[in-house]
Image (cartoon, rainbow, N blue to C red; front, side):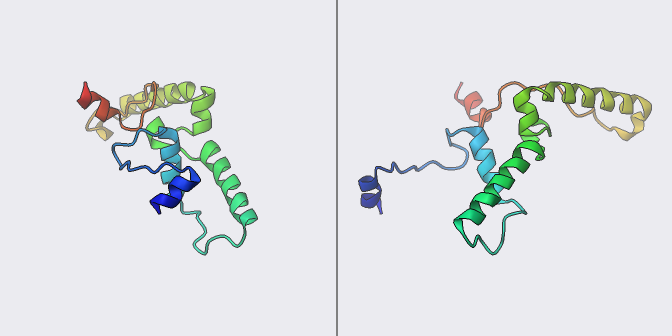
Length: 129
């Protein structure tokens, strides 16, 4: 297998979860595809079926899927900067709800502050420092 990979010019990777230096957005996308409930259990009948499914999936992922790592906004909202207003509005809503019904919160409200850069394994950089 290794010889064939070399013949084809393919560079093998031995990266493992938790130590990857790949693009965090791509890694997240691949994981979402892997566990997507929309994945056809019977597979694809043709290349065109697969392309059509991926096109629909990409549209859903970018415009509807609320990603937990970017505080439950869609990748499109994050990309175009709309996340800042959305997160500010959520923070305001939660603060008002806590003021109105403080007995519902045993701790502080969820942190809806806007986020900076997103990284795949930020804890690894902290440990190395």
